Length: 130
Image 1 (tube, rainbow, N blue to C red):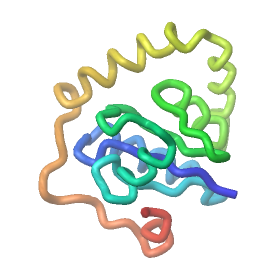
Image 2 (image 1 turned 30 degrees about the vertical axis):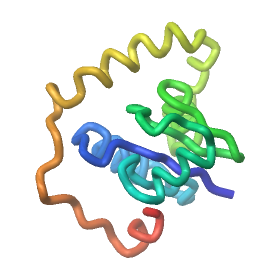
Image 3 (image 1 turned 45 degrees about the vertical axis):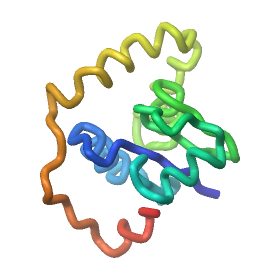
Image 4 (image 1 turned 180 degrees about the vertical axis):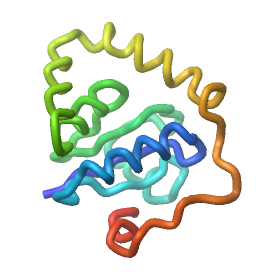
């Protein structure tokens, strides 16, 4: 079984977050697609997620999770102590998403947008991108 992480392909912070996940996903549980890609758009439609969603989206067990719920569910499957962050799921999502939305609203200003160049993943990692 695996899950799919949809991310903003234009965002440096989002790209760094995907690299962070890849390094801590020794089991290869996650696959990836940008929100802007054909695969990403198809998955958004299949799971009734609005196309204008500006958030990490996690598709897991046939269900779509967004914002902090997606991030915490991702953390739950990472190597090391990161999985303990999942305990924050007990905090009501409107409160969790205040922090998430603040970071999301400022991510381009703080981290910038991607240029025309990008990191070339290894063949093993490349297979996990849809």
